[in-house]
Figure (cartoon, rainbow, N blue to C red):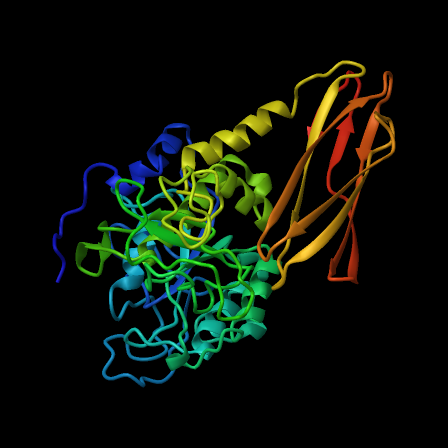
Length: 455
């Protein structure tokens, strides 16, 4: 039963802790963004959720394209939602709680201006690979209730999916089972937010899919003092032999007040932390719509703006300088810092620069594989800038490692037009060359009078 049934009157502590309310004051609440969740289901007409449900227009409701039930057979006892529920139904309360943290009204939600859609992937708290994958399939191209993916419409896909669950061996998952599904969703331009797990405080306890994957944006849990929760799983990931650094970021996950069917209650877990990050992504996209569909850019904006952790508490990286690390990732998600960062970039866009003016761009190379690579990086500088020619670097990148370099250049006096550089990355393990990537990293458009826009 819920601890309380009353809706809060002000923003909850966790919403304030990540400065989401400060972003609301700037006019960004998640508008024009669609968040999704697959979980135990959702109480769609809960007072905290109904106004944000994409299927509700204030007068009528349609669940087509907005809801899917992947539970077709009850295998774990009597279920109040039955099977193939034609409308959103929550058989446990967990899903409604996580959705409230993402978009809930009355101060419980991080992005109350966003819309939501949902999928039930568990039967009384038990899922399996087929139900998890079916929900991902639905989100890639939502379809009407009772239909199949053949009637799917990719234009109705959400921008972010929250996954406050994991698939352990007892549900039929090996470490690789969901990898292709997660990578397909990410390739479609959808951010995949995943709770890191509640198997801490030991190291290498981020051990179940989908939190272990490079394509997942995995989230650890913190308390009201920005301390990592004792239960929050830590990296590195060893179950697949990768040694990958996880989690990617952290968020409040201790005593989070949110909606459940029939009222409100407090819950703790990395399940409660993940929805904060999905909500902050929605706020970020409201401020910077150009990042919609740009998963790499969105993750980078959230990571670089995170508040550094107080202490890493081991698991690789034991000083404040060791960021990211296997306890907090890049730190605690911060909505205001993220939005301020993209706003600063947008304000820089129309600034006029004179002839021979200094410009900068930043290169990013990420190792998304499972072994440490040596990377030989060559940046072919754009024509019409000084200095001319190429720049080269060599670096060692562990799994999940990120190399960055800011490159300063100057425009040639009198030049008007585009500037395009090319980045070559040759990687090898030992003495074996693996591949050669030729990537247009950044394009600078120069107009007269000279104006820089960086994409």
